[in-house]
Amino acid sequence: MILSSAIRAYVCSEPIDMRKSIDGLAALVRPMLGCDPFSGQVFVFIGRRRDRVKCLLWDRTGFWCLYKRIERGRLPDPQAIALRGIAMGELSAWLEGIDTHRTRTLAEVKARLVA
Figure 1 (tube, rainbow, N blue to C red):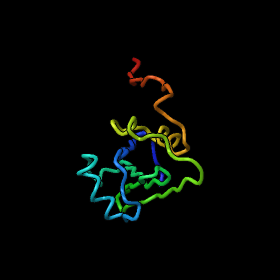
Figure 2: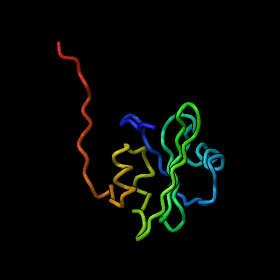
Figure 3: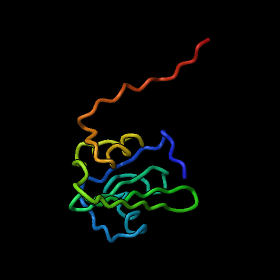
Figure 4: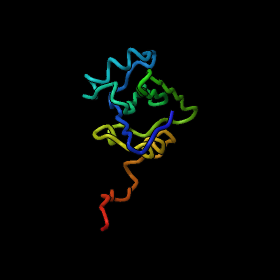
């Protein structure tokens, strides 16, 4: 599994039951995030205490489900990043406990052809 920078992550701001399996999470993608679970994007679900997170990803042959349990502390509030899709780098930082809402990212550069 290789996650490129073209893949976006969508974070569900409402806590979910961490006992849900792949099928249960996939069923939540459309009603809670308004996206297609088969789109190839990453969908992130957080437990009530914000110490557990599950990521769901479709890769053309099946679903991946990644699970992380934070041993100390809890994840930053997902409300700020749940309003928009985030880049994989932001997701990685957020999963490390960095509050990405308080950081500044560089502006996106549009590629242009030089003649």
